[in-house]
Structures are given as structure tokens and as C-alpha cells.
Image (cartoon, rainbow, N blue to C red; front, side, top):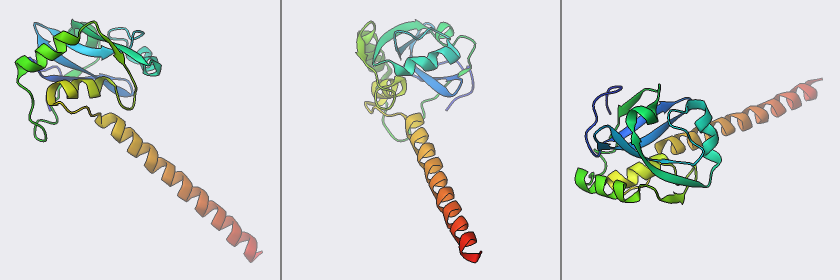
Length: 162
């Protein structure tokens, strides 16, 4: 993890805090990041970039971190370094730079910006925010189901006592 807006090093994962989700990029040096962005996403777009989740394609872009982050806070977050061996920074940057300008498949649940940067750094495409969202939705769904079941049981009990 890292402190908000700490100075990144080449190959670092950058987590940009958007409303309701995090956007991810990989730092390639000289103030630039490479990131996966659906064509409709504007740098620093915040709320409007949520609509980009509906896209099926994305473009690999190289842009200044300050433009991508806009007014949103960001931090260096190499959160899986304890679990996976990161590739050497030169290899991460080379792979990222080679992909700039390419249009790639995009899917919120399996091919998003977090999957993209983790694959570049660790060769493991994963998204914790997708996993966490699915877990939250699953728990909320179970809570609703249990609540509905208890409601039905309570109303049956009440009817039987009358």
C-alpha cells in the first residue's frame, strides 16, 4: 500500500479513487501511466466514467497521471507483492508500452482496468474490487432472503395464533 499521492516508481500500480470504485493504472515514468479505458472515459471524469463500465471494448492509453487522476486522490498500491513476485520494472514498462493504442476486450467483471494492471505487474489478472462487490452482493442477497423467510414465518405464526 502507499500514502495518498506518494511519488510512484516505474512499474508501480496506481489506485485512483473515483466515486464508487477505483480506477487502476501502471506507472511508466516521467509522470505517465498506462491504463485501460473504455473509449467513452474521459481523464479525471469521476462520476461520468461509471457509464464506461457498459462498454465492451477499451483502449490502452498512455497519459499523464495528473490528467488521469484529475481532482481524484490516488496512491501507489502494489498490494499483491507479498503474494506474487512482481516482474522487473523494465519488463512491466515494456509490456505496457507495447500495448498503448491497442483496442482490447473489456468486461467489468473479468477484463477491467484492475485485471489489466495486475496482469502486467504479476502476470495474474485479478480484480479485488470485483470479488469484493460480488461478495457484498451475495451477502446482501442472502440477508434479504433470510429476512423474507423470517417475515413469512412470522406472518404464518401470527395467523396460526389467531
